[in-house]
Length: 220
Image (cartoon, rainbow, N blue to C red; front, side, top):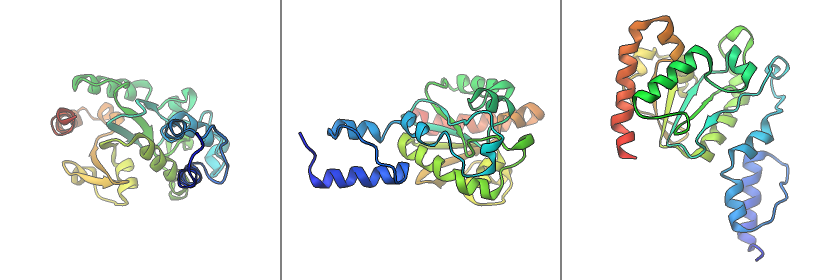
């Protein structure tokens, strides 16, 4: 059955918002339209060759994200590191293994959550993201969140938190509060790499994950 004019207009408008001014030719059945706009793989394919900033010239891999495309919780760091750039997967290596252990402690796995970064390409020498890079890449993150539609965002580390919340507050002052980003609840905790550098952070980080478990997981 052919779509009515209103459905066609909504399809074209949503496609433009998600993928720019490139028409995606598809069978216009309503179930196909719904699939199109919940498909992270399709979105990844549409942006993985991005050339909007100089990081595209130095990356090995575009690091989109991994996990459950309909996750209730999304973990977000600031940018890929060396191993992430080489493998094209966020949070691998020692920090990623520690994050996996913490998730296991609250009875989650990577298959239950979604993990990504604000930037999709590694900054040279793992430096902090530049404002110009965030400006180009943050819309991709917001579109990812729109497609996933989680109930909670967990910002991993001060840089990720300050970038999303547009603040210069310390991580200490940002913890134990509920913020909003892209109309989604956001909590702030330590980056796993910080826990490896300073074991004293493990206790407060565990408190944060207990809050995630008690306030969100038990309501899901």
